[in-house]
Amino acid sequence: MSDPLVSRMREFGTTIFAEMSALAVRTGSINLGQGFPDTDGPDSMLERAVEAIRSGANQYPPGPGTPELRQAVAEHRERHYGLGYDPDGEILVTVGATEAIAASVLALCEPGDEVIAFEPYYDSYAASIALAGARLSAVTLRPVDGRFTFDPAELRAAVTPRTRAILVNSPHNPTGTVFTRAELAEIAALCQDHDLTAITDEVYEHLTFDGVEHVPLATLPGMRERTVMISSAGKTFSVTGWKTGWICAPPRHVKAVQTVKQFLTFTAAAPWQLAVAHGLRHELDWVAALRDSLQAKRDRLMGGLAAAGFEVLKPSGTYFVQTDIRPLGFTDGLELTRRLPELAGVVAIPTQVFYDHAERGSHFVRFAFCKKDEVIDEAADRLKRLSAGEA
Ligand code: PMP
Ligand code: GLN
Image 1 (cartoon, helix red, strand yellow):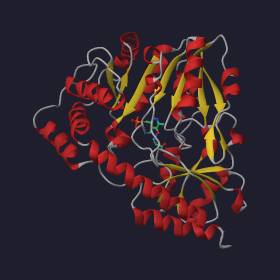
Image 2 (cartoon, protein in one colour):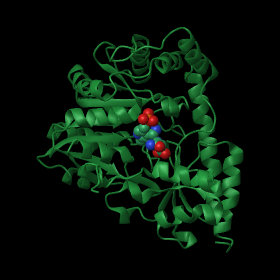
Image 3 (cartoon, helix red, strand yellow):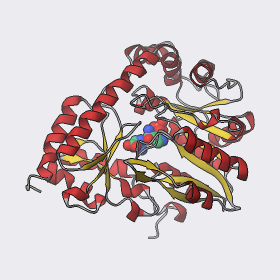
């Protein structure tokens, strides 16, 4: 029988996160692959969700999201970034950032349009672009002095008359790069010169280290009016299973994205929205403490990985560390990560699956550090087997 899956989705198969988490469960390995924390979000926010359910917030909320969350998002944007968004018409609550990305691409891109994204890129970008019948044009981030960045000339060369949008993820998964103002200014100039829409994935906006500041692209001159800014509660409050995100954008863009979103999910789950509104209003100190604790975990895992023989690249944000596997005598990260449970009882993510030019990332492997200290230590200890000749 022929494959019932539409041809434009056939290349996608199962996500690497699902594959690697299943491998971890099957082999009883420590899972430093999929990025999810092994501790819960702030107590008062969890309590607010329980209370919301018990007090009857169990029917469809309004399509754009509950007014409480839209108001809390507007206040937060204003306070943190000095960006004013009207809760009525400039904010749309989505089922995680994933839906926000898919609905934005589907709403804003015609078949045949091109969308620029930096590779390695988060896997849902390519799938959303394919669903829209558009084409992804990948600009490669390469390590320069231990930090992944792009060549502005390569970025400019990626624009064609069909380019419609650029997807910008900062802090960047999977490299941990936080774009500087100078890098963002290059992107902003490109958007303005070629009339591109920027879709910014800022799910790690609060998780930056060493005093590095996250700068939203929409804060650069002339960018607010052409940027669809995407956030999510999942990473900010360690509730990745709540799948609650939002878009902030000019009214025309929000209307376009909502037109698509209403037929994907219509609205997002009610109790989480009330709880996330509470979190944005009352738990930002908790988020600051999470950031500090993650910085210490980053350093802990980096030390362990270096001791195990990896070359380690220091991230300025996110949950993830990139490693170069060549000092250990390996060259293919996909092959290594598939064998890693058997070699060391640990699961990681092969970075090459996030590239169009897979060969440019074949020697990189991503490890997540959003785990308890004892889990990180045990994983680091096990990974020493790789260089101890046991592999
Ligand atoms: N974008 C990036 C860069 C991510 O790492 C993730 C995973 N949190 C998402 C989007 C998806 O976010 P959500 O779980 O809110 O859909
Ligand atoms: N964002 C998480 C990561 O990059 C995983 C999300 C997912 O499983 N799709 O690891």
